[in-house]
Amino acid sequence: MAWMAWTWPTAIFFMVIAGLLIIFSVLAVKFPETPRRGILRIDTTRGDRLFITLLGSAFINLAWLGLVGAQQPYALVVCLIYALAVFRWV
Image (cartoon, one colour):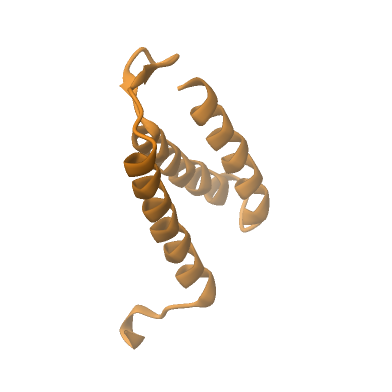
């Protein structure tokens, strides 16, 4: 795996994603939910909202990197606010 140049931040990132997928899988089995309709007017489940959050967060981080620079911890704050909004209203 040396060719991939793993760093601790990269490893933590992928561990968090894997952890989220495991948690959401367990939640889906233990507490099944019916899809709900939010402001997008499409039926979404927890997994759908997680996917929307991860995709949007990737775009937020790319835009932040292109427009602001390397101060990524502030982009994380924006992503957390975005995630709260998605899980609340979408």
